[in-house]
Length: 170
Image 1 (spheres, one colour):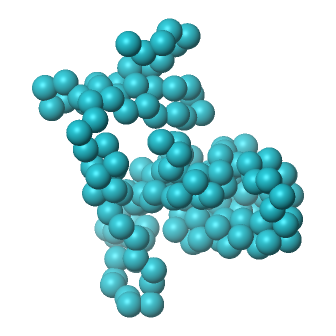
Image 2 (cartoon, one colour; image 1 turned 30 degrees about the horizontal axis):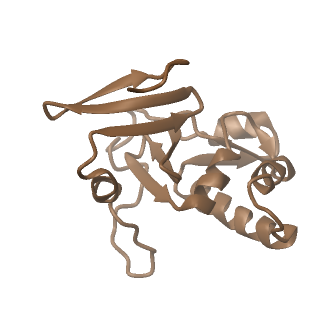
Image 3 (tube, rainbow, N blue to C red; image 1 turned 45 degrees about the vertical axis):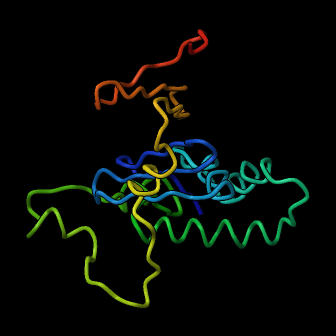
């Protein structure tokens, strides 16, 4: 089975936490360090489960492969169910399963995701509240992404993003 990120999904690692966001569904999540390691193993390149498992296993020392495999598979299924990633037997199937925005939808904003509340569904904390608590009182935030390291600076209540080259932040 192949897995890859959806085209409108973005992953970031912030202070050891994994952050995933979907532009299409407008949903996001924050994961602890173990989840951050799993997220680092996934990207837009279609990869077989075994390859993703090998990439994730590099972050875990002496973890039983069978337990890691079970946890990763559960993690991937949850991400797919919430439309952060797609899976399929080949790249054509991945492309076919990719969620897409269309004005032909009855209600494009809500047709992608079920917004009905159910007590059986696991609830997650609001990511904005989480990051507010994490960075409250801090004027600088370092964000690591696949595109490089970024520095976010709070100046006059406006967040400015600076790409970090080879220079140290002062």
